[in-house]
Length: 209
Picture (cartoon, rainbow, N blue to C red):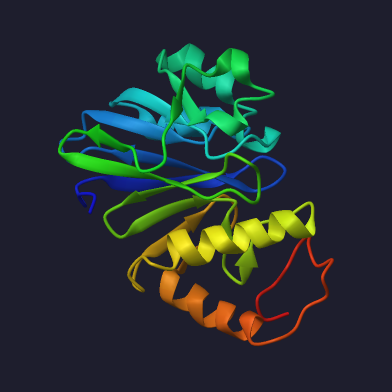
């Protein structure tokens, strides 16, 4: 299990879609990792002041999570990482790709990559201690937006098989809006799973809607 040594700071809401970015800082406060690069990236840089940014990790390919990438890389010189399936259309800005289950060291802390396709083919979540940075995979009340019924089913499998195995008190920090817990999300999903749904269900789905 990853160490709980990392401080997780939410920076947001940012930009027209109320994005969250996250700054992970080692216990000594010397090094940091930025997660996602929405607009208004100067606020992320302000939060990171006094630390050395060692990586920028992007949870998925959608443009609102990449809009500030040039400003962040210019200011920090940090390499950019994402899942291979979501390199496009940003491949010229990606320095390396992340493997499912990869553990990233930051000081004495650890950050684990969890591959959760569905919202996009390369969506990832990041786990440190009992904090899950969920990107746009899981929100309070439902999954992230899905473009097709097949994408929704893939996203649900990712949530159930990869995220719901985490302890119920795991805090979920999403890519937009307020957080939730794995335990609360499981309760909401149980309502959804107990009902029948049309085969073409997709889009903005609510567990209890």
